[in-house]
Length: 227
Image 1 (cartoon, rainbow, N blue to C red):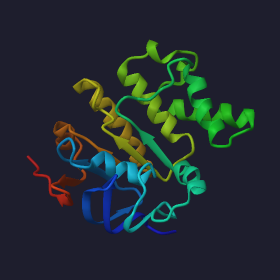
Image 2: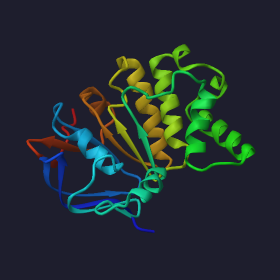
Image 3: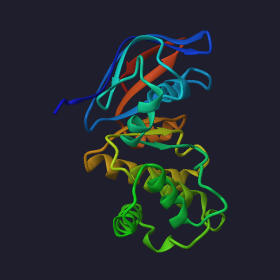
Image 4: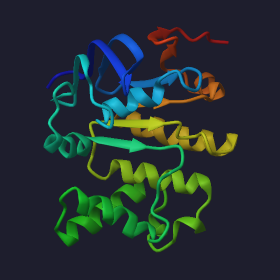
């Protein structure tokens, strides 16, 4: 099994016809935890969108979880996404259904049919995020931190090779942010690769890890100062 989960060579990322990031060369190995930092508009979200095939890769070579990103066919995008777990800043839970139905929706959309297996999987991911008894609650009954935990549980449903987290603590207070980070680090310690965009520099100091900075169209590794 390859130790590389993501490989980008001479990649330029476009928003429509405008290059946002140029000449990216990057290797992410299995089990790594990587922060993406940079100002708003520096290209972090465009970078993540390219990885989950929301933006096509037009220039350079990209390989992710066994799929070539350049020339990726429309019909293969759902298979690529099954190997990815994506966590958003605003949780993206469906407000009109309870937590079990939110998770069921994802499993059915990705081809699960066996009822017993589905129930087992839902219990398993909720156990991982410490919310096993929340099956029948509606999203609006949960705090922001609990909603983000459910979003992380949802990202784990298909046992992804890679979790992409776009500002997962952006809408949370500092204490809740730390709790969500502790959960993500625990998931990472169990072998999952995580790439996380963040503005929260306090978290970087508290949970130091490899950091890539997005600045003026470039992506480069920064060495964190340890206090």
